[in-house]
Every structure is written in C-alpha cells, then in structure tokens.
Length: 467
Image (cartoon, rainbow, N blue to C red; front, side, top):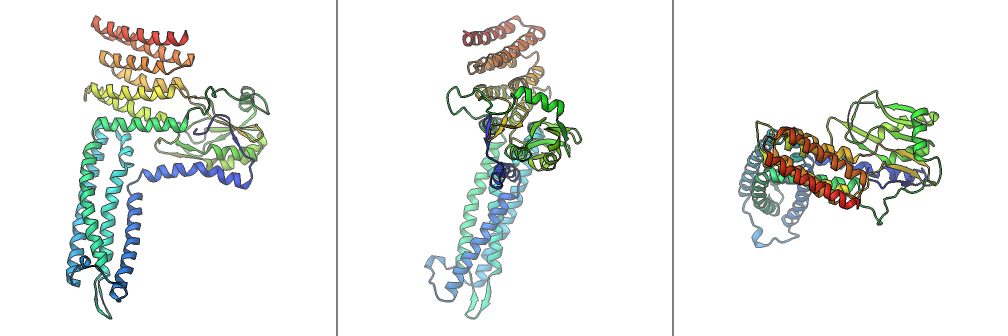
C-alpha cells in the first residue's frame, strides 16, 4: 500500500502521469539489491574512472608538467610490471576464496534456514561490497599494467597508478578481515532472525505509517460519488473482470499509476489481489466499472504491476512474518529439535505485532482531486497477520509447554498495544486455541497451570482496555 488511506491524486495531466511513476523505481531498486553483480559492477566502473584520472596525472608527470613526491617512486618499468602482476594474481585468487565462502554460506543458509532465506543473504550489502572491492582492484591493476609502454621520453611507468594499486591492496586486506567476520556473524541464527525482524519493522513502517494527527485514523467523508460499500457492490455486479496475463506472485502494484489510469478513463478499479498473493493467468486480477472503460484500463493495467516466481518484502509485510515462522517450525521439527530458536522467533513476531497493532489497517481507497473514488485495493487483514504469526508455530509445537507459554506471553504483550476491540477479539481467540491445544496434548498438570495463568493475563489485559 504505502500510501495514506483515502489518498488524493491530481488531475491526470502528463505531469501527473509522470509523477505517478515515482513508486516504480522502489521495485527496481529492490530487484537490483537482490543481485551479486550490481554493486561489483558499480565499483568496477569507479575503479576504471579512478584509473583514467591517475593515468592522466601520470602522463602529466611523464611529460614534465608535474613533479611527483619522493614517496611515489616505484622503480623501473619491469619493477612496476612485477608489482602490478603480483597484485592482480593475489587479488584474483582472493576473489575465488571470497566466492567460495559466499557459496558455502548460501548453502548453509539454505539447509538451516530454508531456501527462502537465500535472498536475504544475496541482498546483503557487506557481501556485495566485498566482492566488488576485490574485482575493482583487479580491474584497476590490469589497466595499470597495460599502460606501461615505451614513449618519446623512454619507458612510461604509471607511478601514481601503481601507488594507488598498492593502497587498494592494503585496503582489500581490511575488507577481507571484515568479510570473514561479517560472514561468521551473519550465519548465526539470532542475527538472521533479528535481520528479518528489522525487515518486518521497516515493511510495517512503509505500508502502515503512523497517523500524522492524533485520532486521525477516521475515514474522511467522501466529497463526491456514492458510498464505498454501495460502489463496491456496483462494481462487483456490473463491472468487467480484467484477467491476469501471467501466473506468479504479485510483487508490486503501482497504486498511484493505477489511480491515474482510472481517472483518465473516468473509471473505478477494484483490485482482487494485493502484493504477496499468487495470481493465476486468466483469473480476474481486477474489476473495472463502468464497462465502457474496461478496454482502456485493461490495456494499461499490465504496466502498473509486476509478478514473479517469488515473494518480496516490497509492499508485503506478511512475507517477513512467514520467514520468521518458517525458521520457527524448522527449529521445532524432530530432525532439529531447537526450541530456543523457535522462542526467539516468537519474541520477534510479537515485537512486530506490537508495532502493527497500533497502526491503521484499512481498505485502501484512492481518490482523485475532486474526491471521486478511483481505486480500491484488497485491504490487509489484522486477523490474517496474527494467524500467520501464530497458527503454524502452535501446530508444530503442539505438546510443547515452553512454546505455548511463550506464545501466550507474547499475546499478552501485544494486547497492551491493541486499542481496537475487534483486534483484541482476534488475540483472545488465538490464546484460547493455544490453551485448548495444551489441555489436549500436555499431560503434566503443572505445565497446564502455567499456560492457564498466562491466558488469564491475556484476558486481564483485554478487560483493562474494555474498561
């Protein structure tokens, strides 16, 4: 979503349509970040530009228009070739080691955390920068090596370039030490879990920002047009379904662009999916009202959204919840039997739900400047997010009192941040399911007493809000 509820957009002139594309680069930035080639390519380009600069300075010194400090002398052409050859050979060897360590870390991550965690490691800036630093140094050394020639004044030795290459190799040693420490730290389960929790927190901030004004969560009156419920009913009864053109997970929706498209066609678009849902080609992706605008909107709809083979964190906070849940249920499996990792995941899930419980999760309605509704998205559900955070862990940890106690404790903490009675009912219902599972699967009476005591804390917190 990423836009305030009841967002108003300007008239659909050309400038507005260009501004409606502002949201699209965020998806492209995310796709570029989840690669191992973009940052190295940028650093290689920087190294090439740096060599052009140092080469120009070397030419100036060679022609006598500039004097070099005494500490930049690097000897004869043969000595320069030997230095640069040694640097290039050493760096390319270390690059192979770095790639090997990276592949090993990805393999361990896939086995221990699940294949969906691989994207988190690939998008790590530390790994990308390390690979880029070594490749850039290699490229710089090779370019400097190729510049050693014989000119009118004798042998041309790029003293400045060689000195810079020596400085780069020293810096690369520091980068290598950092990389080894970073990899050893990043594959630790607490670090992985905390990183995913940080992604969840950032996604919540991006999709469900805090209200700018206290009590500002109330929906504004629609200045023009029928009420929302009546309009939705009309769209479903009389609108034209627009099918999806390809199957895959919905990764991004350009809501601003869609609102501008609908305004230009004097139509209303009702989306059937939100990012994170799986879209099937040929099934309805959106419904357009009135009928005569369907052709124009359908032609532009494909450019305003993106689908792919996997989910992303862009516009989809539930994906981060699912990642934490996946780690937890893997830890609770008989093959792993790591209860403490599951408890850590529960703690961070509850932290995210505490933050989410204080935010407004309304069906996104996008209006034009005159107040007419142009786009209605499939609204997120608080109950769905809570259930995704608790159901699978409760089922995988059935018969484990430690897991049940931590879940009910977490629900009590989340309850403290929940002001909406409907949301409190969702939390109470989840606590009751945990208690029933414990009563059925835990034979020890004292363990059941502990869970019931925590359940009483949840009910007491709900009662305080109700009072």
